[in-house]
Length: 307
Image 1 (cartoon, one colour):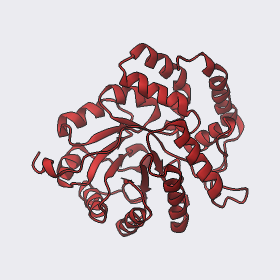
Image 2 (cartoon, helix red, strand yellow):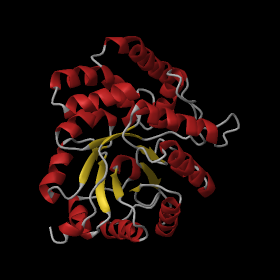
Image 3 (cartoon, one colour):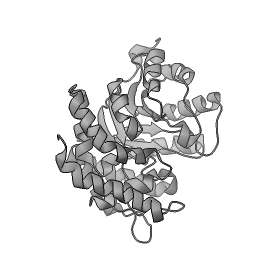
Image 4 (tube, one colour):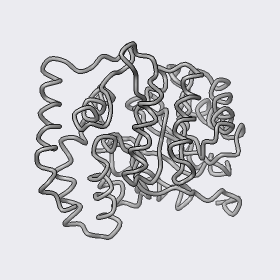
């Protein structure tokens, strides 16, 4: 593609948990607990942190809370692994301002979403993404999740955005594994792809994605890293065994209550709290019983895995 030689190289690959934000009993941001979760993931060997994404409850946080959570992540990573900050705002102007804030706070990159609530035309979405990219020198991962955010980054849009030198990656969260090949066929190696749905991680990585932005890694980092390493090594038998064990949990990442389910898994595994900020509520009733069963079954059988 024209201008490809000036595109920033993508510095990211591997397993990047979409880190949760922790709250205290009054549902204020618990910054020490949030930092502890971040540090524990760094210590587990993940390849990067994505903060202030869906699992980070970005849109439930005030601007100063977002800056504090990002600052904690930069401190937890301490330059050892990259920190990518979600940019998820109601307007383009607010997204531009937060992109600049994130760069000033020491983020290594941005994960940029469409503007929230409003459903844009393709031209409006492209203009939004260009504006945020123009506001920062940081490398950018676009986040395509039409089921959740009602705006699709179409192949034509990706082709047009190829001239934006700091848009380097795409987190792909459509529930269709064919999309990875379609993006490669349309754009070649222009964008580094990341699997964005946990229950399509195997397929995405096998089809050429370089990394995985993962929810369940928050609760099961060792197993997530083992799956990634098995696929990278071409050990499909081991990867299939890990994926089959993991899949009942990974399906939780595709549900509307993914944040509550992932935080409950964190709590059960001793890695965080299930507290969420309204309008979300912790799981209850039959759904809680169902999810608890999945988590407890996984915890009880993880010792049998080929780690």
